[in-house]
Image (cartoon, rainbow, N blue to C red; front, side, top):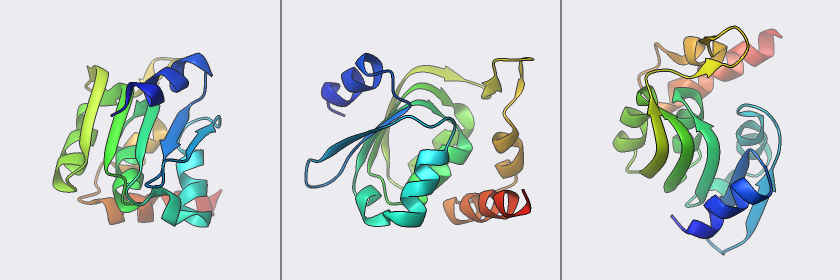
Length: 137
């Protein structure tokens, strides 16, 4: 992981930074996994082989990144539940803080997306569960 992506993540106060295989770097600012969702839906080729730096990577984001073909991930905060998906898909990863679960700051409760994808066995199931959840909304 290049320090440049991590620096951009912090200096620009964005939620996600992606560098594609051609070297193009883009910043994203939506909450949660919405930027990953948009990329999977509209620009999947941008993720394939990319490096990403993110504020938070839980199982939901890890599954989306793996499904999208990301090759390397850095997170300020990473959930232990993300690690098996990253390892199974050969994604190099690093983090600042490893946590048992992703929690929502208000109310100190477990992130709803983490609960939704908890039963998923692989990246494809994670994405399918998330899409099903969003379709119901």
